Image 1 (tube, rainbow, N blue to C red):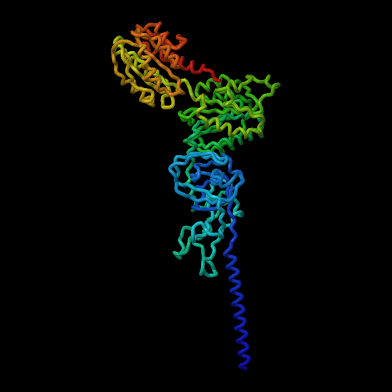
Image 2: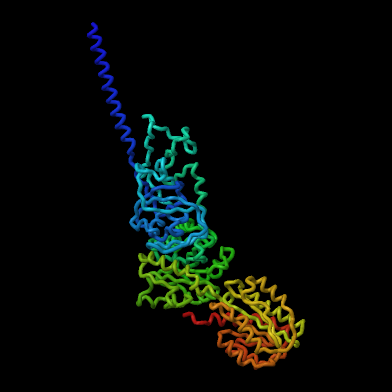
Length: 626
């Protein structure tokens, strides 16, 4: 009996040992598998900005094609978080245009970001931003050493902006934490978001809700991250007020109208639209023009893109001339968002040729300071030109006939190639010659006779005449500037071109000019004006001298007058009472009939103001446009 009991005990012990060994081996295999979880690096689209990803350090995969200028990058080496993550990777040289994996690390914001051209990407400058990032080519896997000792690799959390390409959740397999030494087989229980681990010594673990978001899904607790990325203020290097006049005529057809809308969308995406940069509106024309949206309707590229998609074709003829007149009179107004200090640009898109005349409407637009660009798609063949109202209509419409303002596209399917050349031209504000008008592009120096024969009362009338003329001009540091001097036998600079930059300041300065009294040395006064006033004129400004005198000069005026003409100073001579007509004709720029004026008494000076302004503008507008 005892032998049987001992045998049974030995069998039980043996079975227990077998189960124990089997359990240990099974546990080791499970632990080994858990230590090596699969980690698929999430792929993002080219337009995802670093500010939309909440992680401080993360690994992502960029697709091919992120070298496209639509994906804006700000800075160099260290990038503002408003930049495209993948665009910055290409700019820095970590990736080429074929895409790949990158490691991104957030750093502190910078006081300024300087733009540069590198690896086929033009980055932009930015004054300041509160968050930055750097990129490197490291492709560390989750099962390798994590970036921060003692922490697990962090999954990517993105807040999706409207229009951002969604990433399928199936493409994102998030890393799970490896069990720490001494942990039980049941594993660690993930903590709810926003709570700390009960074990204060435990490193931060992955959060089950931290995933790359599906299309349109933004968890409620993550909505606040969108406030970290304020709307763009726009590209300050391209501050223009831009109107597109699109062809909605019946002849264009639905398919080509869609291509035209896609072209507008591409332009809007390339431009960084915002209140501190370019603003854009659209007018569609057929028989008659109609505003689709104006300059102040949309303040970013994404909203402009959405508005363009809603535009439907109007049909009718192709009356581009009527559309240009409409834009000149109605579109570029303060009510519609025109900013005054920004150049006005109208881009006219024409399928073939217009069905009305554009030359006169374009001339009035140019004289109003509107820069007309023409894009002609599938223009008239030699046989078709007989049907055109205005052969060579584009050159008659634009501000310069050197090819800068007119673009010709052979067919609609090549229109997309025009996006970059057009954007480059409309943003080149130094070459937008039509932004300069007769009222905003001059340095005007008043040379005022303060001799004894004028008298105190009449001198105030002269100053009122000077103020009335000045009031007609657009005065600022970058527009027309005003200076003034007074003379008798001697000369006195009252104020120079760079002293006052607003109209109100200039008018107040004119009121403060005191009457001097003395002789009349007009020749010396002209010479003084050239040295003390016009020597400080800006090179790109028209130089206008307006001289007011009431008598014959005591000194020679011929040599100073010739010197003024030689230096390119356009001189207007205004004579009152006892002024000598022969001297006025010598002082005035040729032809004297357009630049010399005479009134018999001071109280009639006001009558000369509209004539002087008209002649200044007529002369400006008659300059060659080539």
